[in-house]
Image 1 (spheres, helix red, strand yellow):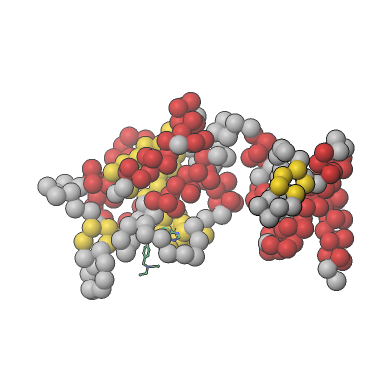
Image 2: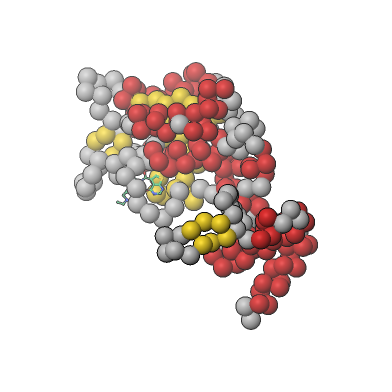
Length: 249
Ligand code: 9D3
């Protein structure tokens, strides 16, 4: 899968993309990410990408022509038509379901917002506008990287072990069960020891599976009951959930 990311801070995007699982996928050729400096698509000597808002008010607005020139260049290089994702606080909330839909598109353009946002006329070239949540950031680079990360890891071969993608908590609609690693006992700073639950050391895999289901369900019920409305539960999980709900009556 191929991504073109258009930004006024290419170094910020480059650094993230080079690290970790995405960096390795790029080295292997499973993933292709081209980071483009919006200033490269200006035509004036000072490479200006922003201007004052018509009608007045604070802050600056991203000029439309550099964005149009960038999209024209990408279109000429990649072939038409483009799927263009614009990051903005006005966008629809980006969810795992949205990531899954986008992972079916072979090529994506991500436009990173800055300042007070884009000249509204660029929206004529935009397929979808996304926000990553209800908090105010300084720009769209981190949101674009969130979209890249969430979409890219769904592509076959990007994440080493396909099971971690399939068993993904949001893929199933449940939170993860608790994880432990060695040692089986560890001394806390408070001076007492905390042990790994015995069931995980028992070697009884049927019991371990059931314990994990119960933990995942009780955590979800406690922390994110909203997820249970759309969760895909098997019969055993529905039974455990019924028990857990009766327990809190
Ligand atoms: C809604 C706030 N705006 C009111 C004047 C100003 C403004 C604040 C921050 C305009 C743009 C930004 C920069 N944020 C993004 O570009 C952004 C964003 C975000 O701030 N939160 C969650 N998702 C996203 S996606 C892009």
